[in-house]
Amino acid sequence: MKKILSALFLAALISATLSATQQTTITGVLTDDMCIKKHMMPGKPNADCVRDCIKHGAKYVIVSSGKVVAVSGKTELLDAHAGKKLTLTGEVKGKTFAVSSVDGVQ
Image (tube, rainbow, N blue to C red; front, side, top):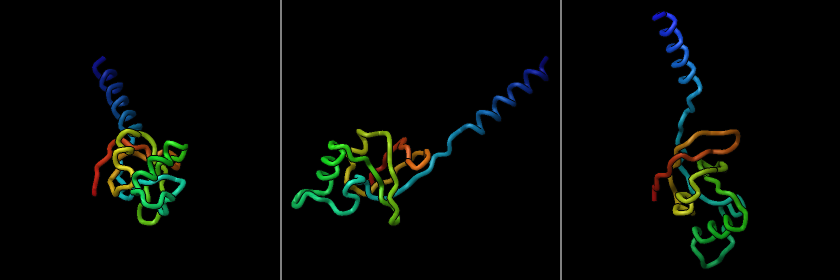
């Protein structure tokens, strides 16, 4: 009986380990998918433009090493860091980076 329970426990442990998601980080500038690098609100800070675009249906993206990556999750934290350089921690889900935490760089 102990061998069976040990085998079941080991199988459950291996299964949990294999199904665990791998966290990764990405550092770049948080912006929106409408403006990306060239914001369209002259005289206003980039952060204001990003937030306005998000309110009107744009989605958050992070520009890192010249690549644009779609970002999802933690909207309240992303709003606070709009237009800034930051580091995001999370996991890649398809073509989107699902954010689990935000660390401001600037």
